Amino acid sequence: PDTVIRPGVILEGRTRIGARCELHSGVRIVDSTLGDNVLINNHCVIQGATIAQDARVGPFAHLRPETVVGKAARIGNFVETKKTSLGDGSKANHLTYLGDATIGNGVNVGAGTITCNYDGVNKHQTTIEEGAFIGTNTALVAPVTIGARATTAAGSTITTNVPADTLAVSRARQRNIDGWKRPTKS
Image (cartoon, rainbow, N blue to C red):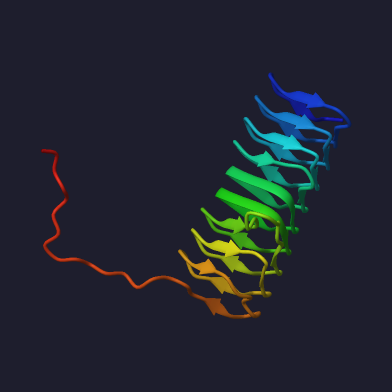
């Protein structure tokens, strides 16, 4: 009851939509379940996912099979998930890929974060425990665990576990080359 479905929404398979949801134009939902008060913004594709009450998704998000979005969690613009559980109140707001990941409650995943889950042969798991903060443009090379309330510095490539309540920084030192000239066309 009281769910609003805007023009151009496609619901397929065994899809179930809760009460007081809002599905904006261009959304396609296949074999998925949405709890109550869920907002799906324009042009999202949701396949084989479960979205808990009060969650927000999109615009332009792609939730692939076995994605679970927790209560009041947020998946934002140009975010793709696959076989990922995003905990209650957690958010991944911009330009992110989360594959084969378990993410606890109250986690912030910064823009441009990637879970590097595939080594060319096998898929590996990333675990981010509750309250962690993943800095912008972080690559999490699985298998890896980010401990509770840990922080990764922006621009880091994380290849080993990060203990709880720790800051992980993994960057090359910046070099400035004086007098450098950009090449010109001949």
